[in-house]
Structures are given as C-alpha cells and as structure tokens.
Length: 195
Image (cartoon, rainbow, N blue to C red; front, top):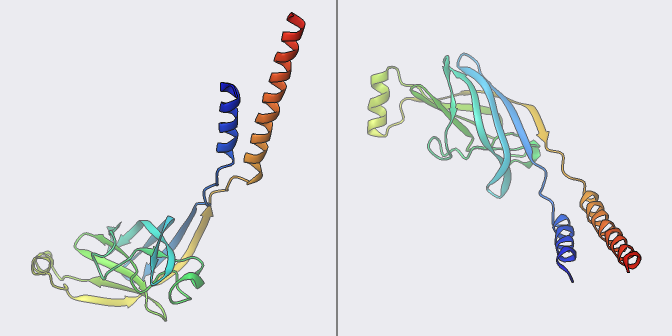
C-alpha cells in the first residue's frame, strides 16, 4: 500500500472515531428577598453527589447586599458541592435544581450557600455585624452568626451544543475513498495514454 492510500485510510478511520457527547449548559435564576439575586451557570462538566450526576457550577453572578458575588470552590462553606441538576428529577431529592450541599458564593465580608433542603430552597449565610466582627470570626474559625432564610431558584435556560450527526463522518469517509479511487483511475488512464 502506497503512502497516499495509507494516509487516506487513516483519515477515513479517524472520521469514524466516536463522537463526543453534546455539551449542555444550565442557567438558574436565584433570589433571596431583601438580600440579593443573580444567576448560576453550570456545565458542561459534571460531578456526582450520593450517586446522582449534576452539572458543575462555573459561575455565579449578581449581588448580595449590593455587593457583587463570585463562585466559591467546592467545600469551603457549608460543604457545598456546586452541583446543579436538570431535570430536577435527576437530583438526590427528586424535585430540586440543587442538592442539600448547594452552590456557594462570596462577596465582601460574607459567604452564602444556596441549597435545597428537601422541601424548599434556602440561603445559609454568615452575617457579621461589623467588619471587625467578621475578621474576629474568621481568625477564630467560628460561624459568624450563621442565618438561614428562604430562597427562590428557577430555571432560566438550558442550552446544548448541536452534536455532529453520526452519518456525517461516514459520508466524509466514503467521499474520501471515492475520491481516491477516481484519482487512481485518472492516474492509470494517464499512464496508459502516455505509454
């Protein structure tokens, strides 16, 4: 087998390789009356909690007490796992976009964990009365007056990248093989005419 035939075969076989799964992004709106509101974006990466697969949160936007918020990494506050479930039936509770560990974010002098407690959404947060009280709590590793209030979490959007149709690589591979056969025939007829 000559080089061009081997290259064509390798190219055709690479087109037949398994296709990646469709990428999904989930966006949730959240709000806590008198405290703040914003959005959570999750996916396409996934993680598990108690055997249930959810999308890993990648960003939290919005404000809490007029201060901008940002996503915390997993585990620093209320053992958050930062997983989002869509559809809600895929969650450990069977009816919440979040699990009991929740998604955590921080801002100036506070940490907040949005979670689902089995019957409703809640925001658990530390609420220092002063900046000095906050630094004292942090230096002692204490709770900083942790509070829990009701929250609202709703689905804002779910987007999927359009996957490549499974027939497209087969078509491309077939077209490449037909092109190679046609090229070979053309070359053979040119050799015969030239002889």
